[in-house]
Length: 116
Image 1 (cartoon, helix red, strand yellow):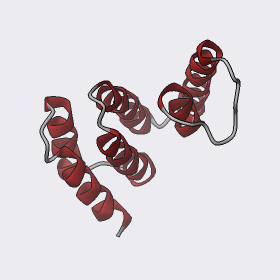
Image 2 (cartoon, one colour):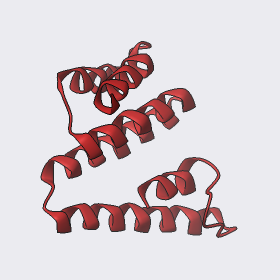
Image 3 (cartoon, helix red, strand yellow):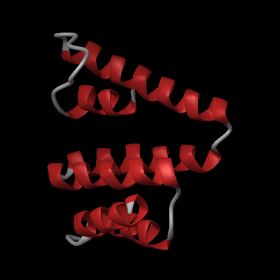
Image 4 (cartoon, helix red, strand yellow):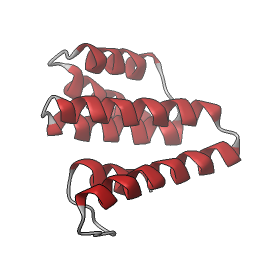
């Protein structure tokens, strides 16, 4: 849900095609909220924090016209939501927030650690 919400905001959606950009934005917001509410229902506060970071970092990446960084944020964020975070992931997010050009590669490395 969250990925489709993001795609409705910034890219081409895969499932839902509203045809109106304003409606796409509203639907994207609704999908974000549904995804967050499902994590909240599980009581996984750490995953909620990671998802909130993911949403904000993706928005920051697209604002900077950096689709590669946005993809890396998704990779790392999904791994952190599913398998937890670590200091490398937190450091990579800090690089992304600071606009550091190493952020995308560090986020991907952090994701690979979580998935191995």
